[in-house]
Length: 163
Image (tube, rainbow, N blue to C red; front, top):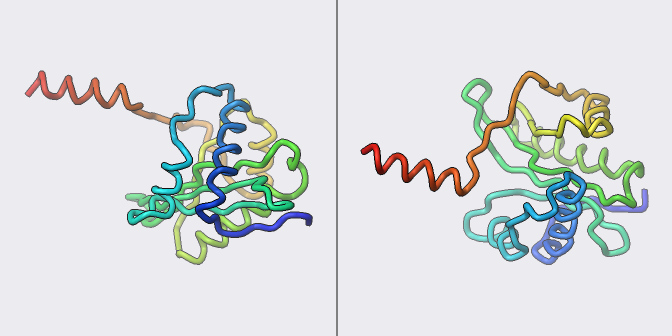
């Protein structure tokens, strides 16, 4: 292994941002990233810590991340959500993804969570195969539902009108 896995620090957030942008391009959404390095520093290391992050480092460069946060399941209790597991293009196939996922599972286990969950795009067959090989169940009968910021604003406007 020519990389190390460790907990992220504030000064890693520039490298984390670069990987977030790399993922957005890979997922065919290069202009969708709204979060900034400053947001990551505030939200990951500020008064109200909103996420936990592991980084993979090689030659003082961030080459992979696993960003997670707590959730609560009405069926299971405490769970962890893996927002993103990102491996730099040049490091894919090196075992780095497995090493990052290992850290996430160990962390979740140490917290006593009942489940670790995440999403994967249905066309990302290499990722799906990777996760299934690790014992994850890919639930193809569930759809992701979201309200983006403009939809939230519209919802609130509609609520105000109907009140």
